[in-house]
Image 1 (cartoon, rainbow, N blue to C red):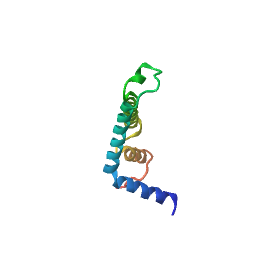
Image 2 (image 1 turned 90 degrees about the horizontal axis):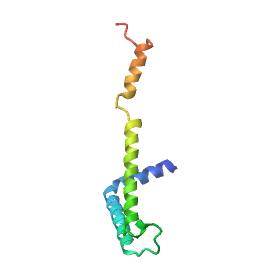
Image 3 (image 1 turned 45 degrees about the vertical axis):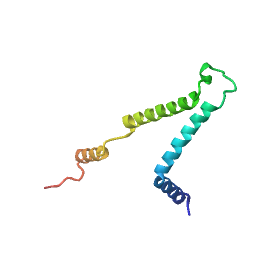
Image 4 (image 1 turned 180 degrees about the horizontal axis):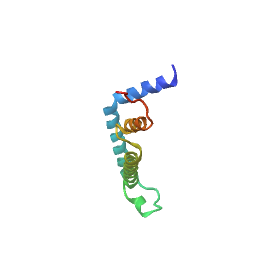
Length: 103
């Protein structure tokens, strides 16, 4: 069995269990916030280090900002219309005298 088949099976198993994984990740994030609130800070280098759950919420907000930024870049630069390549091919065929019906 090659690595591609193993990876495909693994990814299919993850997709089948998507709802369970979503709830597990939400529970894990909530647990990190609760632990961050309950554990006492051993030291406070910056003023915001003493705020309960600040680091967990700051990391979560940062992740959301990065996801939004990458989606904006993707929609702005990467994604194209469904007929983007087809329209360009049709124009090139007609301009170069490609396959045209003699009629």
